[in-house]
Image (cartoon, rainbow, N blue to C red; front, side, top):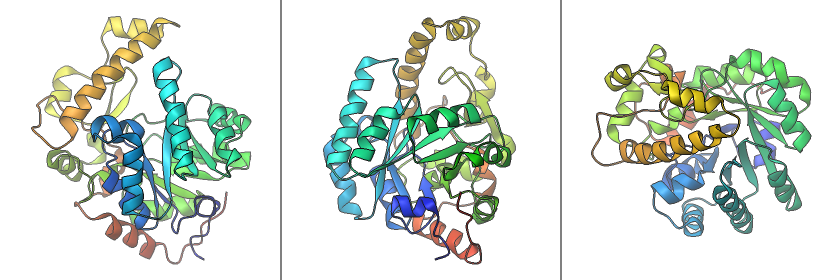
Length: 332
């Protein structure tokens, strides 16, 4: 088959396309629609519960009623909060009990998730931004890597998609392109480079199935890649957002006190927690259905260059597949 890559075989999906886990935009209908279209939808636990208001278990079961095809679970491995870490362990256990067998991890050491997943025949892919983190992920026993490049939305990497692949392709694991995929030409280019698949997030926000506010979707459609800037004022570390009047007015650098605390070995955990709690409230309020505020941060990557309309998920996937019909992915 044209789309037989290591990733599609491991995930049990038709096409090498993942929908990146998004806070707050990973609503159940979007996750299910991507899987139903032949890609891999990823559940983001905080988005499912805190933003969209589902009991975690019931939310998973609702998604499973919308699609019988494979879905994945996102896990941010964060040790700054014992409460969050304990909750994530519970979420992983419930996910496994509900039959989820593919996990997308980020930040910390995913070894404990790898052990739980492998015990039931599951698969773990870890997000990395450079080789040193990829080596740690390999040491932890992951099955694949998601290479987050400098064109990604959210917390982007520092390297372009070609250099990042070249830096880690020798590690013997399939690599997913994370960032910059906005249209079918981007998709084909990534596959031709040797990526085993792509992870898209911004592209799937501008869809009929995503419940993000209409103003957010319009901002993505109207933006060009030069409109994407990195701000430190949401989470304390650079975050890719669309440049707006509000962003210009408040600036993109954290204040001197915040920057000082973020450099401190111990106090940086407290500062990141403060940023996280503040951004959780703000992003929940401003990005979803309801009244928009002038203080809006629209997370997006440079893939906006290829997004010109709001479409349904299936039409996007079908167009990408049609464009790539003559392309044989190179297994990595």
